[in-house]
Length: 221
Image 1 (cartoon, rainbow, N blue to C red):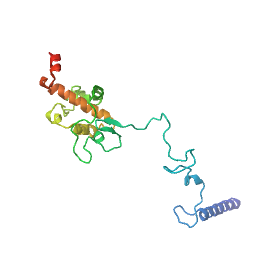
Image 2 (image 1 turned 90 degrees about the horizontal axis):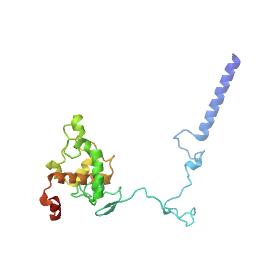
Image 3 (image 1 turned 45 degrees about the vertical axis):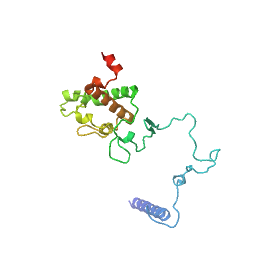
Image 4 (image 1 turned 135 degrees about the vertical axis):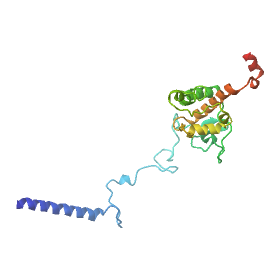
């Protein structure tokens, strides 16, 4: 029994001595010392890396910042608008739906309205918008018929027809009332494509033959 107690006491003393030695050498966590700290893995503090825009002999041309290799695919590409190329990070009407530096919405869709854009808008509208607004935009989607959602906007109402393209884009992006935000789901170009297609639906309902050219009127007859 005495032997067992002696062994335990010895082990305790050895552990205390090792702990004291460790604290004496390394110090307490967060403590201050005039001596530099002990570095077990020095590369965690001083990593071998290249500083951007600095001379360095790692590459043959002696420059740390290198041009992309031929054929590299860029992580982001600019969006071509009627006013030129715009990147996704820029504070531009094409990304916000608003005039830069103001809270005013842009009047006209900044993307060129082409048959391809309208076809894309038709496709995205049917996927994201028609369940509530209906494929005709009249507010009679499937959610209203079987989902008990009476408050669905009719996109042919005057208040929506007179909205600017930027305001409709903003509503798609951030949502409104019971409508959720589709910005995280629908990319910027597709949102503008949907806006263009909504205008097409409105024109198909509210337009008159007087707005057509003579050739178009003749084709209808």
